[in-house]
Length: 91
Image 1 (cartoon, one colour):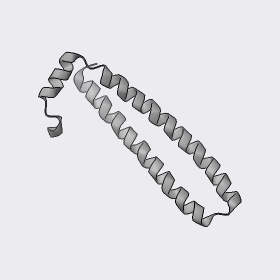
Image 2 (cartoon, rainbow, N blue to C red):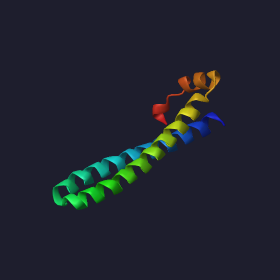
Image 3 (cartoon, helix red, strand yellow):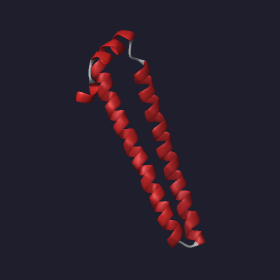
């Protein structure tokens, strides 16, 4: 895989990671709202459902970060030197 392909893939995975983080934050906000409005029975059912969703998101989050790590570690020394020469902030 070329440097540009690796960078593009890393960018996609980083975006996905950010989206998953946003989902978790949104879910957390929903939990806070539900605690105020639901009865105990409804809260337990909602909590169980939200735990399933959290587990699914976390599994996807771990897989995404594993891929990020794999790609990051695949850069050769020459590629790393080349990347240091490029000002990625301008891209």
